[in-house]
Length: 185
Image (cartoon, rainbow, N blue to C red; front, side):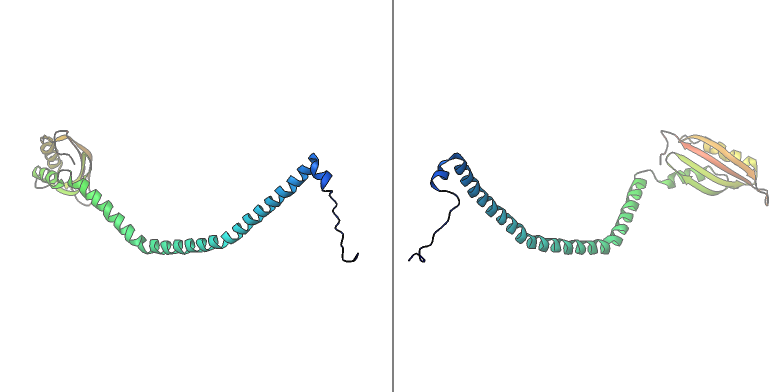
């Protein structure tokens, strides 16, 4: 019978040790640390299991990004063309809101002597640059006088005049500044 009776050895005395302050603190620490270990293990298990969900989500997002990049690459040419057309429409609308350049050209050609040939006319905000050729200085002077009589022109200035070497024609440049009450581009 003695063999059946097993003795249990407890290194921590039960009665006296639990009654002391140190014993109660030690018992509390052991039970608290057990709860902390269990809570930590649960957090680690949740983090491990959530990794699979996060990997799946990352893979889905990578596929979505690749799809959107392919769509952007496919539509980039269309968007470039669309932006170019928008820019051209903006330029056209700004030009159409200004008085027609044909009115100004008609006014200039109205005062042009028949022997004067215009080679280039450049229109900008309130300035007109005219390049042309004439057989003599008299026709150039007459053209400047005629243009100066127009009330919508603030000033008419001869910026350059020279004789062409191969022919006896006078090559000239005029600068016309439009007046505030005159036709504005």
